[in-house]
View 1 (cartoon, rainbow, N blue to C red):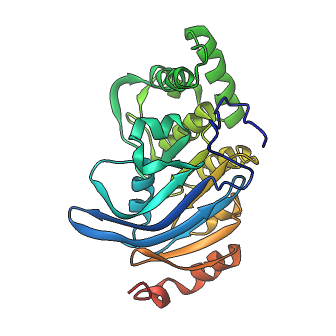
View 2: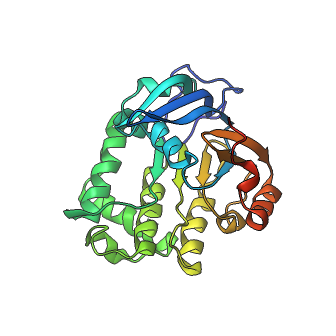
Length: 268
């Protein structure tokens, strides 16, 4: 099996047939209410999977459970990431192992500049991998190169994280985070929400450039337009807490035309 150049070690848990992500019969509650009611999903290295569905179906809950967000309780099922028990890891370990969640509504962090936030995150990954940390000049050189590659305004590095950013700027900044952290599993929770065409092209283009045989993507979206830029291997319909249908990109196009009403109630 080819080892990633980003420094992630297999530690003996992976083989050539090991899925990047294997979710089996996943049930989860939020505030005592069951939201996920038996999710089954397998993403192999190099694959892009899209999850679509109506509001309240459990799409964001699935992303938060995978990322380890507090308040989301798994009551049954299993999740294995690169052969490791993902549910046994805390949020920080999941991130260091290469799981990245792009938020639907990225939060503002007042008083913390973009460059300091990103440098801290990148060096945390380096420490986890046993690699040398980057000094200020090394990181700034890297960050400037990535902003140029992505077409992202370098001014974002000097501003407080997401403070006063437009929706498009917040998503561009997350694209920059992805490019610098080089995750193995990228979970995009409605990244296309609120983006105009130009911003969508920048963000989707950044994601598409990161496609490689070692990475996998879970793209959660309401609309198929982002899938014009990030073409999925499979499209899943999530309704009432379960995946009720799977197909290729033509399924997403059909959903755009017909909506989700036909799937509501199928998970019962």
